[in-house]
Picture (cartoon, rainbow, N blue to C red):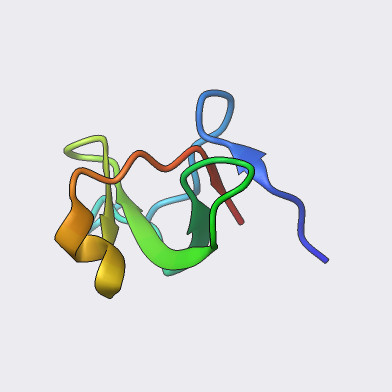
Length: 64
């Protein structure tokens, strides 16, 4: 199983042309339910594509 990466220590790799990562499993804290999102390096922000989108801004703490 892949390990969780702390966003304060490591950002996900991004596509240089679009400045975005691929889809990632994310959490907002160690106790939250995982959700799918991606990282936009140009704006240094996390984006989501489901129910979490209604509770913006999303504060992703870990990804994998």
